[in-house]
Amino acid sequence: MVIDASRQHEVLRWLDLRQTALIDAAGEVLKLESGCPGRGWLRRLAPAGWDRGVALGGHAAAVLSSRLSLLATLLRDPGLSWVTSVDALYAAENKLVQYRAALQEGVRVPSTMVSGSASDLADGLGEPFVLKPFGPGNFEDEGHQQVVHVHAVHAADVAEVELLDAPFIAQQVVHAHKHLRVVTVQDHAWVTELDATGLPLDWREHAPAHHAFTASACWPEVESGALQLAAALHVGFSSQDWVVDNDGPLFLDLNPGGQWLFLPDRVTTPIARALAGWLAGS
Image 1 (spheres, rainbow, N blue to C red):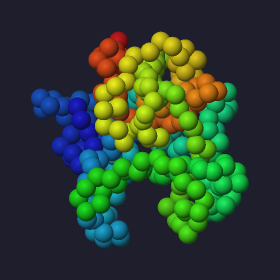
Image 2: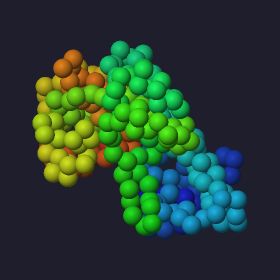
Image 3: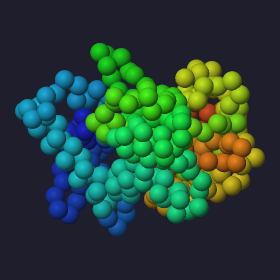
Image 4: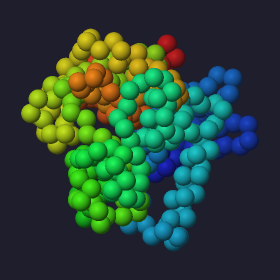
C-alpha cells in the first residue's frame, strides 16, 4: 500500500482517536491496531513537483499544508512501525547532526564550518575548501533538474557571496583514493568501492562512475562505523558516502532515504531482501 500527501484521500477510509482504517488495493478495509502494528518505509512525503507553482500564503498552499498535517498524523499512528520514523529521518538528514553523532561514535569526519565570512572559512579550513548546500543538493530551474556538485573554491571566489543567505557547509578538501558507498538495513551493512583515480572531486559528475562500484570486503572498520552511526541516528536504513585518503576511511554523508539501485546486483539483491524481510516481519 502506497500513501503520500497526493493520494492519501484514496487510501484513508477514516480515523478517530483510537483507530485508523485504510483501504488496500483490493478495496478491503485494513484497521491499524497498536497491539499488532503494521510496518512501513518512508521514501517520500509527496511526489516531485507536487507543490510546483503554488504561491506561499495562498489558498492552494493552505490546502497542501492541511494534507501534510494529516499525513503527519498518519506517520505517527501508534499502529504503524517504520524502518525509520519521520522524526528520526528529519533529524538524520541534517549534515551537522550527522557529523556530531559521528564524532561521538569515534568516526573520522572532515573539518567542517558554517560561516558568512569567506576569510574565516579559509583560516579555519585552509585553501582551497569545498562548499556543500546545507539543504537539498538538487532543485528545479525552468523545468530542468539541477544538481549542486562539490567543487574546490578559494576565499576570493566567494568573497562577495552571502554564504548565510542560502546556508552552505564548508569543509576541508579531501583527496580520495577510494569512494565508498555503504548501505545499512537494521544491523546489516554492505560496502562498495570505486577507484577515485582520474575522477573529479565529486564522482557524480562522471556518468560512468555510477555503474563502476564493486562489492568490497576490504573495509570492516567502515562497515562497523556505518552501523554505529546508523544506530546513533536511529535510522533503520541508510545510504552513506565515505572516502579513503592517506589517513584511512573518512565519513562524508548519510542519507536516510538515499539511492542504492545503481550498485551491483550482488549487493542490491540482499539489500532488497533485507528491506522486504523487515516489512514482512520475518
